[in-house]
Length: 124
Image (tube, rainbow, N blue to C red; front, side, top):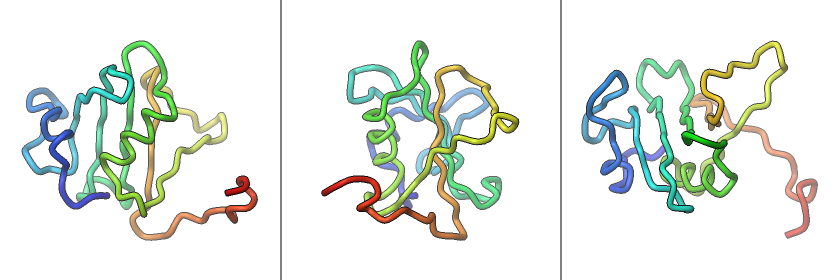
């Protein structure tokens, strides 16, 4: 995760309510205009003691699930282009659906995410 919050996120930081945070915090809630001109609601766990070894960012809209382009946009707001993050599709018994239009990105702090060989994904 980036070590500082970029200006576009800082402008969208929520400063009141239960998820409020202070300028410069890596955690908090943000409302940002996405690449399609729609509001993206974002919550970041940051990297502090409460994250339990995981960086986590959730992304939602009020009326639909975020698109791939919107998730890439948010990924780039929080992480460097050299960092890999993942979206899980857990076993059905582990599903948690707190918000119908929310997706999550995760990155473990203490291990590298294994990736398949590039040729298995497709040609370059």
